[in-house]
Length: 112
Image 1 (cartoon, rainbow, N blue to C red):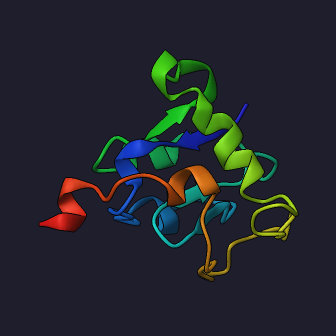
Image 2 (cartoon, helix red, strand yellow; image 1 turned 90 degrees about the vertical axis):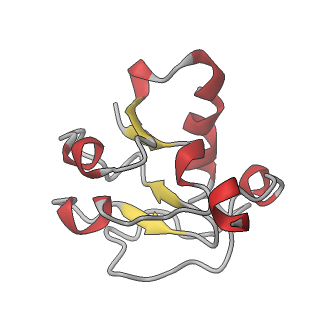
């Protein structure tokens, strides 16, 4: 099981979760953050650090957010970022997003 970043992070990217991750598995895209599902050790520290409550344990995702499991996984594939499993974010920002994130309307926080 991995943790999953969802809607509340789009255009927010507070980033409080990033430095607390003991395995550096939270990567920054253009509009949101992504948790690498194969690198996540399911410790849950990121959940308590996230001020927007955007992170869930995969098996506790509300039904309307389950598509974020695929979004977080597919982001690392050849079709999206091509990152694969680099073994750590190392503070790098990826200059793309999953296509479904790119299509999201800007959040109220970003517009105001």
